[in-house]
Each structure stands twice: as structure tokens, then as C-alpha cells.
Image 1 (cartoon, rainbow, N blue to C red):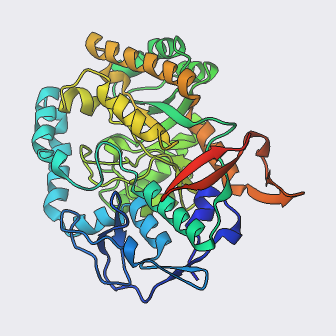
Image 2: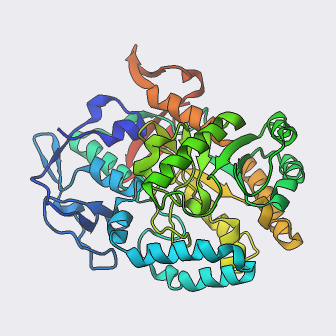
Image 3: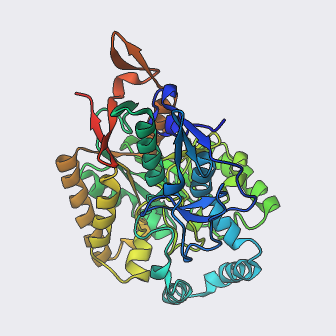
Length: 446
């Protein structure tokens, strides 16, 4: 029996399950399409999968069959979604790439000796040709959402029903969510945190500050208290930000213990690794409630990959809150762009799918007047979006608590209508997923 990913994602009634496998899946995973706009990775029952995403990919959506009110799929949807969210496709591509690992270690050994301009130039050289990568899709990849919506369409068509109720993605009737986070990398960035909070407050934006526990700077209890009193949040940012946290299992476990102690000292519930290096299979060593280290699409990150979703998801007991917007460093120093045009485009792509727009803005990189002006323009745009589109501008811990509460909620039918049961249900809303031709449309119950 297949697991039902629609229940986990939409919180729909269990009765909406109708999927079975078309046959025995292949031993080796590969790339294929599931609809014109979606690239997937996994084992298939048809054998029609490619080794690389830039190959001519077969569309497996036409191979779906309906028999006796059951929808027979050519792949296990939970496996494929897990492969995307946990970047199994990227791990397979990187397996045995010792040269990349060696270059990374050499770079971080030499990094303290390299001027900022030289480091930026080296990174531009390393990422040449990134725009030509077909997968994940730039500037936002919705492969997970596309797959789930296609499955919902198939479920509705198979059961010959027009619509199905689900628990809306965000509290109350918010149409989407925005997170502002600040990774503090240097002493100068740390010293600018109070003025950054002033600027954020002028546009009604609260944020989280990720602090490096070791080696970069000394964090005063006064600043920690000030951040908390102003309604902002404190999280842990790596250990010493040397790029080696996940380079060796033994080293990782030693540092993970120190990171967990730093979290208790800061009163932090969340974590973000330095330069977004990550290995989700090792996360069981952390005591954090949530992580923010996985990009939606990682073409410009030191570690390639991407989770291909603009929604939070669970990695065991830890909630992953993905980074869905381009970082300020990459925008300013790798692309040479000091406008908010790309951020606006990404916001549009994420929010039109009712997703999460998660920003990393480094206090260190917006001290410069030009960069500060660009960031101020972004804040102004976010304040306007909040009014125009009813966006929830939250801090990460609020998203963590909401997503965990929603994950425990259930829909129950009473007196002919659907209601939500579970702690926090007063914040939740019943919504409907309905067929609109061959596509899916959402509406909130009034």
C-alpha cells in the first residue's frame, strides 16, 4: 500500500486516497517528467527514466491508468517527493566527486588570506554556466507543488468528484508567508544589528538573527536581550562558519554537541549552517526544532541542489524552512544587481502558489549605502504586498509552531459540514481544492 502524500501536504480526509503502483519499480532511479512543467527523480515502473536532467525526458503522466476506482501510478509519489525535498538527486550526482570536495576544503583553508573581491571573483568563475542548468528550475522551482497538484487532479478525476476540502496552508486567511532572516557573519555586521532592527521596524517587519557561536565575534547578553525585547528571534548560525561542518562525520558530531549547547545558551529553537552546507541524513544529532539551511534552488550556492519546494516540510522531527529567495550576497556581488527586480519576480512566483518567501539578508552586506538603499526598497515592497495580498510577515518560530500545529489537525464532518479538530484550530481555515478544467484551483470557505 502506498503512503498518501496528499494527506500530509493538504491535511485532507483519509478517504481521498486512491493510488496504487502500476507495477514493480526499477532498481535504479532516474529523471522523468510528470506533466509538461515538472521534472521528477525516482524509480519508475516503466523504465523510462534518464540519468541526467538535461536529457530528453519522457513524460510519465500519460502512462497513468484508472481501474476500478483506483489510480495506478508509474512511480511511488512519496519516494519521488522525498527524493526532491531531501535532494537525493543531487547526492547521487555528487557521489564520488572527490575533486569538488578537495577544492572546497582548499578554498576554506585559504579563505582568511583572500580579499573579499578575490573571493567573489573565484565564486563567479566556479558558477559559470549556472543559468543553463535545467533542473532545479531557476529562479524558483515548484516541482514538489506541481507533483502534488497533479496527484490531486488525478484523485478528483478518479473518484469523479468536483472538489475536496483541506486545511489551508497558513493561519487565518493569509494568502502566503514572508520570512526575513539575518545571518550575522562579522563583528561589523553584529554592531549594525540595532540599526537594522530600527529600519525593519519602520516597515513593520520583524526578523530573526542567526549568530555564529565561535570565533567570529563575542555576543553580549545585552544585545541578545535587546533582540528578544524588540520581538525578533535568535538562532544559531553554524559553529565557526569555516565551511567544514559537514565535511566529516566525526567532526560534525563533535561540533553538533557544541552547537546544541549554544542553542540552549541563546534560547534558540532554529539553526542555519554556514554557506548553506548541509547533510539532512545527519540532522538527528541536532536538538533544534527547525532548520533553515536548504535552498529552493541552489545553482549559486557552494553546495548544488535544492529542495524544489516553496513550502516547509519535515525531515524526521525537524521542520525544514527552505530558503526561497536569492541571498543578498549573490545578488549584489555575484550578479552585480542592485535592484529588487529579481526579488520581485521570485516573490510573484512563490506567492501566486501560496508559498513561503524566505530571505537571507546579511547585516554585513547592507552596511554599504547602495546595498542599504536596495534593501530599504525591498522592505517597502514587502509592506505594500502585505496590504495588497494579505501576506503573513512572520518570524521563523511562528512558522514552525503553525506548521507543527497544522500537521496535527484533522478534518471531521459534522452535521453535513467540514470542521477542523486539533490544538490551534481557531487559527485554521477550511479550504477547497477543485478542478478547473485540467488544473487545480483553491478557494477558502467563507
